[in-house]
Image (tube, rainbow, N blue to C red):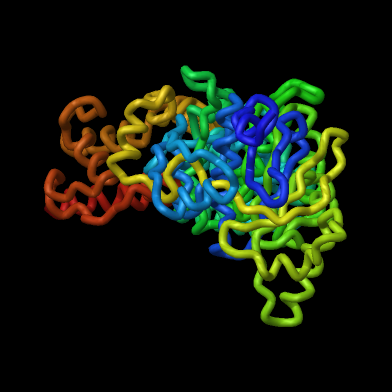
Length: 533
């Protein structure tokens, strides 16, 4: 079998590049995870694209975050430019332009299908990470989730979580048994001291997340991960591209979101053992953001997911600048490696290069640390797993050129792809189902209505009765009458519709506290104005 014949064999392996020998990524070992590293501008995105194209040709769906927008070009055919033809000739490859079926996703719903998850799906651990909460605040968040579970309160969007947090704080008005949420407050306090100050801090962090666009992420319809597991009409894997340029303005949201996706894949997908090729390959760009300042509990979850998700047939490929960005416990599980050039201008940088070199299986023919600093753009040190699952000796190789376009697509091309998407219309319109917010509102409203009935009618009927006594007129709510106009005045401050002399700025908040001495004061003031008129 000739070299060119081997390069067309996409059923069992992916041709990534060529040094002294062709560099192949074996599909049966691709779910053992991998790492692509290198300094900015050395060719990491192109390598990612080459690997994504190879997986797609083999019928493996791909999910990849597109930080700069360059990866979107994979959806359009490449061009036979001079530098591409030259590189293809250097590695003995006949260049043929090609395009791949892509689906664009966007947390903000601007350049792709909206990506949503429910608050419950995110869970307190990841949500605490997203909000940058301390241990005490995370504990209160766990209490809120527990109370929601025990009281049948579905947490779907941000307003659900806000309403629940308000409901678990100590009784704000000392209402005692008249408090419609007394049961929920008592349940929360039974798990520990839930203070108003701690809940207030969490609420402020939620506001920060909302200001960064996090509100759009939580809601329904929630993402079905099966929509990532698609092939096109030709049997090629669909390439799912997460538009992440705007998302990267909040790195913690970006990293937590992708970790949530990995966790959901791990929990939902069945065991697959060692399949002949992965069921899905997941590229995690700017992976160092996942590990920065991660608490111990979160690091343990990351390590567990990476270690065990391979048995579900999912391959995870981290893309970052230096291998030392990845903790050793995770790094040891990344068998397939591509290392682009690193720069070493300071002693600290030189130590980083040496550490990167030590992550490879040594090759007596190469001074790995020296070569890392000499690599040109589009060159890399590669080490893929061999047939017995052992890393091959590190080799210097030229990365093959992609078949699709290198660089971003135009807005018009993106719109055309979105219009033809098989998922068009499924996620585009948000749904606001009845959940914790609505349920808690109904409880409060129901208690208020019961109290009103027990008191013999609403305060507006009482006001109307007083006005009737004064004017000798039958005034009740339901007729366009003096009593109704007063009610409108108090609740809406519609000055021009009320008899002159009534105070112009009686706000909505007053209506909520009518009754007792406050209520009598409002009635006295209102009627006093009428009588003076």
